Image (cartoon, rainbow, N blue to C red; front, side):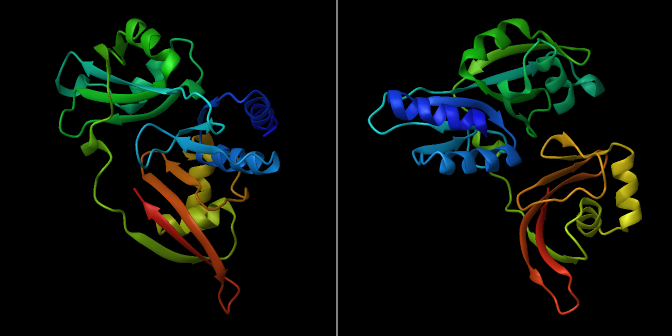
Length: 244
């Protein structure tokens, strides 16, 4: 938040746009709060396409010249069969080039072409990744810049909003409700290191969770805590969530 407040001051005082790296959902919430604290309202979040999860904070004073902070890559695997790389392989290979996670936005594998995957990256990292990334997993990969992410990759069917009640906003209680399992089982997933919230490992079952948090349970799926409502007569908290 201190870093965002400093960027707000630079953008305001010099009248020039400033940009962060890619932020997770929770970081976006904190960044927005920092903008309000700095009384800077000329900002937006952009992840390269509508509905992106990881986004860059764009601080753009009125009448200032604009930059394009993001760029796009298509990664095409050379071999077929079971050796085709997946999301984890591409992510590991890109970070293996020595880049920070903040340089990389969403990775979208193409359901219509199993050999193809697209990435949103910071514009100043596009050429480096295109020239240096030659493999993902154990598969050779050819990388080339592209103009945008194909629409069919992010314009899928609308997700159904589900509802539940929980005894508290502890991570294990909310996760158990979303997974339709017991709190003990949810706590076991957390203890085994299989749960992330907003791309960060969840360390303890008692950690609090917040609206818009995204849960990733390795080997199970992903969930988003959409809204937190009021309480029932039995003092249980109403929540609504999406399952990916």
